[in-house]
Amino acid sequence: MADEDKILIIMTSGKDTPRRCATPFFFASLAAAMDYEVTMFFTIDGTTLLEKGVAETVYPREGGENVAKYMNDCIEADIPFYCCTASMELHGLTKEDLIDHVELVGGATMWELADDAGKVLTF
Image 1 (cartoon, rainbow, N blue to C red):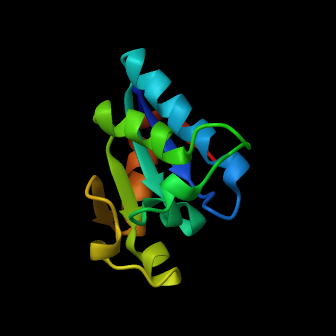
Image 2 (image 1 turned 30 degrees about the vertical axis):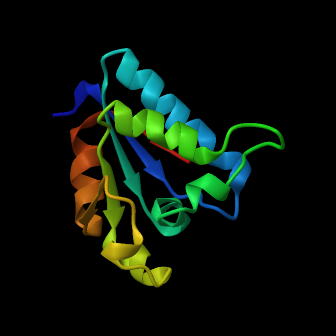
């Protein structure tokens, strides 16, 4: 049975769609501040944001904050980041290429997290 206090955010947008990249992190850190239990699952192009140094180069709007600022808010809030290993292969990434806060998982983990969550958001 789903737990209404758990939120899963599935991140499919990546560095090639910068306007879509800050909001999921903003919503995640906001929900954590509201005492929701938040988890982020990165797949498809979302995985590209987990590569070391990439989030610092992605700006959702000119003159604004980079995605790393929003991502760091989530890391400081202890929001888990799960990365789909198949999407890593898609982008030719290895564990060593990713930031430290990431746990590698298979695609079935996303289904388990979604089944357990009261709310699922996809970006």
